[in-house]
Amino acid sequence: MSDQGDVQQPRLTEPSRWARTRQWIRREGRFVADTIHPDSSNLTRGRRIAAWGVLHVKGLTLFLLGALGAVIITQCTAEDSARTDDHAEDAINAEKGYIHASIRPKPNDSYEIPFSTYFPQKLTPHQLDRFKSGEFDSGLAVKGGTSVAHWSRGSDYGSGQVYFVDLVSDSSSMITVTGVNATDIKCRKSKMLAGVDTPSPGDNLIKAVAFKLQGQKGPVSALIDDFGDPNWGKLFFDHNTITLGGGADAQTLGVLGIAEPGSSCTWDMEAKFTTDDGQQHRAQINSKPLISEGGPGKGVGQYIEIDPSIVVRWKCDHGDLEDPQLCRKPS
Image (tube, rainbow, N blue to C red; front, side, top):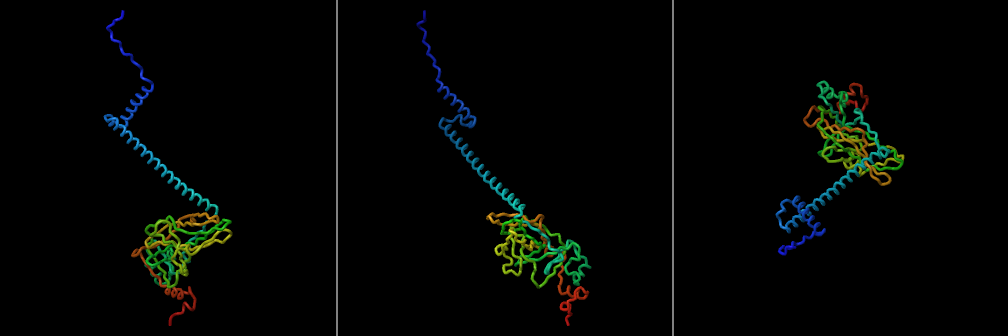
């Protein structure tokens, strides 16, 4: 017999699958939110939603900055790759014979006056006397002398060894040289201790191009170094062209790198040229660094100046010169 006084217990119903899913999302979402942003545990629902929004904005900002950085890095990498490809192409062009050069230094005993000879050691009193008497007219009788040509324009002054550069192209088609530059210039203090200057009222006979190696940034363009040229001292390729290839003969340039007094410089030489398809190229044309000697600085070491007339008189008196006009003694 049933107990009429018993209270009927309510029947429990299982939550639906969707309800269980929502409960799980809320529970796990709450856990994730508290883990990422612990301070949000005591916030209201609205403030938690706001915090969630700020978090996502920060994440989106970082993503966009990362994407922008990736684009910049990709662009820089592409530019570096293009430059590398350009240099590789230039090397291939040089190997193909588009342009190359034979470079030889001017012999020390072939300099025309005015010029100087520098020495890495001080001259002895006996050597000084022989210079002053006219017996030594070029300084080459002293071992280790380096003869140089002078260059000056306004307040700019310097000197350096002269090189003869034969530009050649084995290309069957014509190429046009559009520039010759001095590159990779490195200068240091000169080690020269003495200088013998052989002046003359005449013109410097050094021809063709000169490079002012100091006081400029980057590659240095060639200047006209022919005193007989009305454009002397101006940019060489603004007034001249050099065409090679197609069976054309080699073109020879006299090249002078100008180092300031007290300095000694090494440098490379680069040619820029255009092929008949309109493509522009460049190539280093020296196999080892060129040298430019500026000699002792002002007030440093010994300095001797030779009077050319005394040299002529010494040669006449000692039978080394038999020119009646030059050796005629003044009455």
